[in-house]
Every structure is written in structure tokens, then in C-alpha cells.
Length: 304
Image (cartoon, rainbow, N blue to C red; front, top):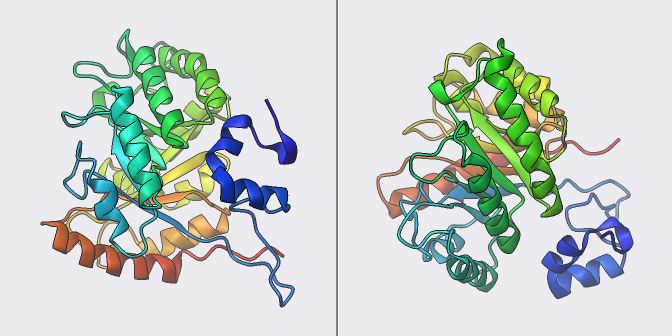
């Protein structure tokens, strides 16, 4: 159901009182606004981190811990990770209360497969739908649907990719109804990801783009061009990492160039750190430095 200003009921409720007031005054959160000088303000960067990067999977305290790191706005949780996981509705509500308490978002969910289940399993659709319910309760916009190596389809063989296309088409409607995008992260090339998303042909199925993984799986020369190939309409979220190093340090990806490419396509989604740290203290310091580099290079272009 669409309400005034084109928002769905779920989106309106998720705004809360302050957001609803902004809508009533004609301001939609995240939209470009005109400043006093007549120019158009840049859209603020949305920066998050995976609970796994903080070594706090299944620990509700990860929300408070992340809120104490300057510059972070959200935490990507794992659905099935830890003793307290998001298959349990009460646990989901506890995370939601913590996120509200500390002014944080849960922009995306990962780790959606139960033990022994992959995207080609008979119960894959059930796991996706269970995760959609958790995402809707948390106000998460993206579910990371992972399939790597032998679980990734051969995009040259319809017998291989056909069942995955059918699965994604069958679950895309449920995702869209909940205001969620299924973000595909895999070991396919950018071109094959584009082909897969275009075959599904539903706006609720896009790519969760991991630039570093493109290099890891043998597509280093295509990693940054792949940003432009996929474009804003196919990329729903981005993982940011450089192995054990800071993103400003030498590695398989020139992150300054990558961030410029995201700016060129008008990307406005989340940048989520999937970084490695020795401990929480290192995580705080590394994230501070990574944030500085990201803000310097990932500038959203002003509207003309």
C-alpha cells in the first residue's frame, strides 16, 4: 500500500516520529536537498561494519560497541550465526530495541543459510523467506544471498543457472513486499552477475558488490570496470576490505579509484566494512583511518 509521498506503509512506520514529521514537511530522508547557497548538498555516506569483523557474531552487544566507533552508522548481522540468532523472533526484537536505543541501523543481513543448505538446496527458498521476515522486523534493506565456487552456477549453461533464476524469481516478490532487496554475492565475474540479475529481471534482486572478492576470484582487471558495468540500478550494497591491511594501503584493489567509480554511477547505498582486526581496539583505530580515507575519496557528485 502506498501512502502520501510515495512511501509504503512499512517505510512510513520505519521512519518513526521524527522521520514522519520530515515527510510531512516535504523532506524525504536520504534525498538531495538545496542548501542556502542554492547548490545541492551531497548525500551523506552510509558506513557500516559486519558483526563478524568485530568478532561479535551472535552478541547483541555488537550494536552498542559499534555505536561507540565514530563514523559508523550500522551493523550487518548474520542470521544464523551464534547461539542468539535471527531465526528467533524475540532475538530479532532485542536487536531492534538495541539499534533504536543506540541510534544505529541494521542495513543488511548475511549468513542466511542453515547448516547444510546452499542456494541449490531444496530448502533454500525457505531460508530466504525466513531471512526476509527478520529483515523486515529490523528495517534492513538488503539480504546477502551468498553462493561461491561450486555453489555458483555456470552462466554458460541454462541447466546450471536456470534453477537459481527460478528460485530468485520465486522469492523476489516476497522480498519486495517486505521492502527488502536480495543482494547476490558470489564468485561470478561482473559480466556474469549482470547476466544473472538481468535474467531474474526483478528490482528486488541485485548485486551485493564485493570489489576485493572480484580480485580474489580471478577478476581483478574487471573489479572496478564492473562497478560501471553493473551500474547503480544493479548494485544494492558494497563490502569494503583490503585483507589484513587498511584500505589506503597497497592491495589488489585501488580503493580510491573504486570509490570514484561508485561516485560516477551515483551509488547511494551502504559501504559495509568486512575488514580483519586483531581485537576491538585495533578495530576502532583501523575503522577511524578507513573512514577518513573513504570520506576523502567516496564523494557523491553534486547534481547538475
